[in-house]
Image (cartoon, rainbow, N blue to C red; front, top):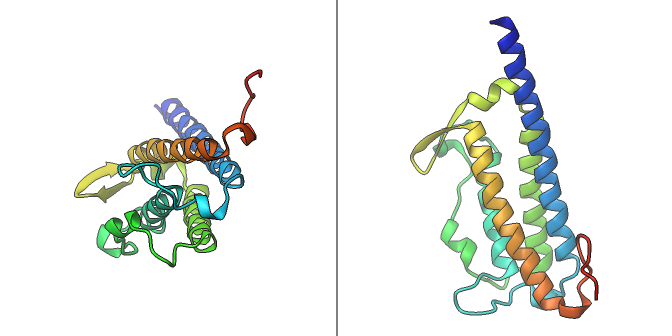
Length: 173
């Protein structure tokens, strides 16, 4: 039995190490794409049903700040979030302001993630009225962030077109 517990702790430690690496990789990927963008392109929506990069950054930042500031705290004790406002552009949504929120949100995530221990993964938290283990939340949020980072990369590549500096192995031209 003790051997199984040690194995579970080892697997949990490996999971946390990998999750830290994967999430840092997502942040790096997004930041490399964002560095290729012109300020005036960030708020551009390519059609009426699409989100701009600014909106995507606001949304991810709002999600992260609320969730990762105190992930195991009751929902009412977490920072307030106004999700609908994340999808509205304002004059205050400058590159500098949105980037500052973006970086603070990722910092909150990494600070929490770096402080987690194997036993924390089975702790529960409530999101939108549903109880989930922290491991389930991490998996779901990783997927959520990966989708939005992919959207940011796609939009950045769209705007740069042939001037795009590939973020991976470029295709042969």
